[in-house]
Image (tube, rainbow, N blue to C red; front, side):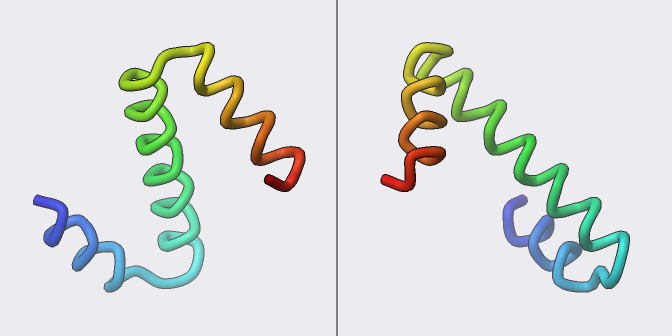
Length: 52
């Protein structure tokens, strides 16, 4: 399934690719949040924002 998603993603251009990128990012964040929980997500965001 992942291969099909990325094959489709690679075929996109312009605004479609930008929108797909945002949706993939949102999906990854939602999945990570579900796996690690709200507290760890907040820690990860803080680390990212501080440049760690």
